[in-house]
Image 1 (cartoon, rainbow over the protein chains, first blue to last red):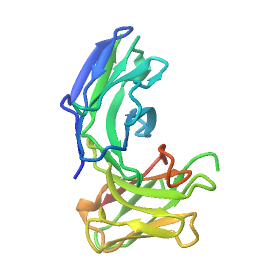
Image 2: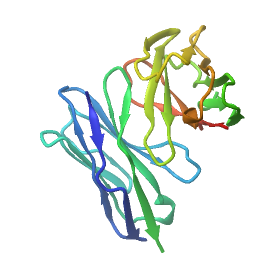
Image 3: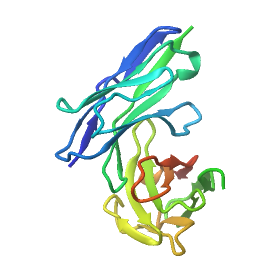
Length: 113
Length: 114
């Protein structure tokens, strides 16, 4: 069975600084997708970034980028130039081709002014 | 519609009552997923549909939980004889085809069982 582990329950960063959230996963599959979702206090689920496992190039979306290490089964999220609006809980998720998402436990990120 | 909608947004019920939670996916989306999220934790998969066919219900906790999507669009998650441990946020998500990657989540239904 697939598992997703986020080992940092809470993190904080100063506004305008850079922060990296860690995620590791376990799977025997070769083709899959990885995601980072943001959940602000409103508890919406907002897609931040996605990565296809067969692509070696790391995904980037504006201030958000990932470091995808397939052999190590690691998928970390880097947030550059942190903003107060980035304060949220962040979930790493693994998806098989069926679309079933498996989420990690989440990391609560606090951006401080 | 413009996005995934769910109703009701909040539901308070007494233990032993049945509840029905509704999900209206993005128009034309083939796949629909149900998840449950306890406070402070990540969502957990319950079940999913492609069109009207339920493909996987391995995440449903027990036989009090059921789901349907009779016309391949709106879906209903039903919990019979609710228990306090059923209190959680219930989320629905849809994706355009069975092969695309991105799931779009609805706002969720917060269920409280007294």
